[in-house]
Length: 192
Image 1 (cartoon, helix red, strand yellow):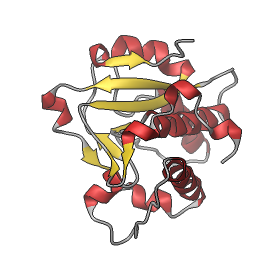
Image 2: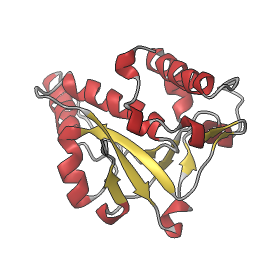
Image 3: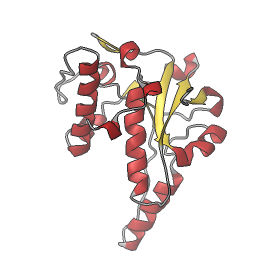
């Protein structure tokens, strides 16, 4: 993993978040995104399919080639670790950078869910298809490095036969099919 993909020190939490049994979970989750979206998120909360600019760009592209495009409602993706959320924040910045000009930076939000919402968080088994392509290989390498940094073997997972909870505990992949109010969000910043 290159230094550019390493999270800043204030987001490194694998010692606390990763155990021999995998990632620990609680009512505190993390969400990685782009700095360009943070003002809107902190005002309106995390919305399913929240990046409206990316959706509009996809619709415009599909209309240009003559296809009708019906955007699917994406859930809100969560991670049990700041470091994992940082990985996804970088991916968001990379995807947006291919469409929009600007100086966007990866940022991580802490998501403190009340019991009612926390009970709705699910392991992201749909990620199995992602993990079988190049971007997934990068993610698996990122996660493997976290395990190594923690002095642990792993992750050892058969993506096609894994139990649902392995996607959460072994790979740290989760989602919630609900919007999350801004009052449950906090932007993580370097305290130094």
